[in-house]
Length: 265
Image (tube, rainbow, N blue to C red):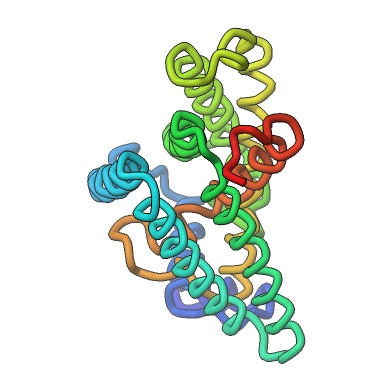
């Protein structure tokens, strides 16, 4: 019966799963036999939306304030994310060297992204960066939940589908096209053609999803559903910016090479 199914799910991979992870596995097992209505699949939307609005308001407020307030916000978010990453690493392995390597690597990964955010001196570009990742997450959520379809890597992240990736690319492209007509500097505002926006949107969606997959893999190793319970409906800080980090690293590194005058020296 149900107990036998749970034991089968738990033992199949030989993993020592937490109660939360076992519950998720049981839900996935049940969904194979029962068609879940759309209203149930999107039942957490209100909570997610409310938390998202609060997070967006805080981010916009700090960008508007600028200066030390903005930089302090980036540092606090980065340190919080690093703490959650270190917690995942500590639970994922008992090997001291691997723990040390994971935490040091995570510090470099997150720290470089925070450094780039603090160095970018064009507020509209920062807004576009945040907006693109928000659109990727939002469109991927709706496309994935409504269309469903084949999973990208079910053993790493069972909820990620190819439809969701398509939605993320659509969201990023729309953000680039719409925002490119208003806020970017003239030297790049004009050249934002349709084909360029599509290529950039696909690239941003793939990079953002890669960051998401990295955190999902780490959480699976740690046997944890979320990096923390700090944000209702969203989990932790790392859960919210896992896609933003690699996008910032990609765009920020490109700025260093091509548009260094947009950075604070």
